[in-house]
Image 1 (spheres, one colour):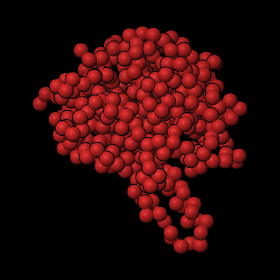
Image 2 (tube, helix red, strand yellow):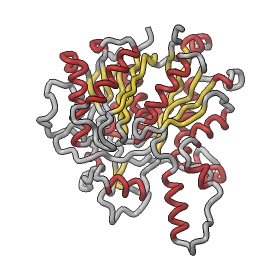
Image 3 (cartoon, rainbow, N blue to C red):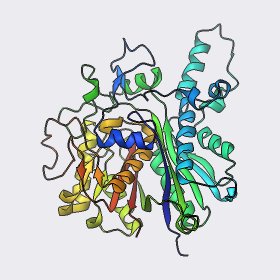
Image 4 (cartoon, rainbow, N blue to C red):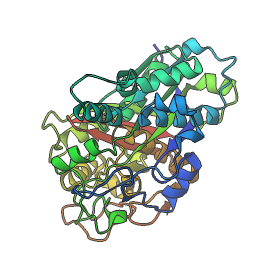
Length: 416
């Protein structure tokens, strides 16, 4: 059967450097750091005292108090970003066939704050199990797409993908394929995460994954820099409206880009560490290019996973050099995590949006906070260091990898 073409018609973002799509882009192009000391809890005894929290987010701006109490922050973020994307797409919710609209969402952890609160409350009591009746429905990772579909009456496929930090990229690829195969006309996809909590920070600190640059948090996320010492935890959400091309064209929708293809692979190596030679990363990019029918020489920009960890950054760049050969030096490579921090299950979504906006504006956002060259990184690669670079981007790739060896890669191109 002939696969249907899939395009992006709506975007929504709630990030540490901007609380909507346009503000997010302003932060990206200007190289703004979203990192600052944590305000959610007392960090005196924590190794890491900073994160990329949302700024100026107030749930009362979007939900009444009763509704907000029923929603973990990760689910709130999902609703806010998806509402923006739906409005941006100009979908006529009164006349669209809602049986052919799906919601496929990514979350690596889900309602961690809710879980933490309920368990701590129990532990501080007399042993009587007095749990909030909303404990389970607030916590479970699949509640985000459930709430989106309930709000809008979308009755197509509805579920959450969980593949750690690759979760929302996985969701995007699933959404692509549901539309390609003719099962849906529209899919609301993306991801959300709200893990800046006592449990989240404590857990990642325990495994030595986080930067401890407490003296200069705004520069702590420094992908590709020789002095990088771990990632910076972020929070927020990104939403995309994927739509079958003829369906979008028939209603005169604005089209941001075509979703050309997606690839998946596994490292099959270690629970948390990447394969040092990037074998799985090589394969996922090859799979993505093959699926998209795009030659390596056509790729203009790559938004890397680039978390600012000593092992991961080098392995990914080695893989890029292997896949793209001499053309690798012609690609604008960047890591927007240098600005947003690492949004875990939401990373793939907000970085896909960054890639799409780079295509729209002809500007590749920078990799900020770079000051010391890493001798283990190929010096011929253009890592778009510290300043955005203007260039025409016709084809953009976005890489996202997760604990457990999960690799996902998505390719976007300008509509032709």
